[in-house]
Image: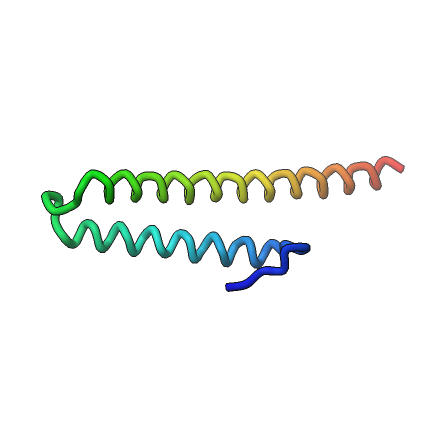
Length: 82
């Protein structure tokens, strides 16, 4: 997937997050289907790192949504008081 480096829309951000999340889920399934004894420590650590990245990005997206909601709420309140 290619992105225009000058613009970032919310839909492209969500699509990229969804793809990243799907890759991590696929990696978890692949590793768990092998059985616990065949996963080497490197694979396990990389999977933990990927899961942490997905979690952090998801929290960032959630924070963006919260901030946008706050800005919209404040703009509406400011219009009502005028």
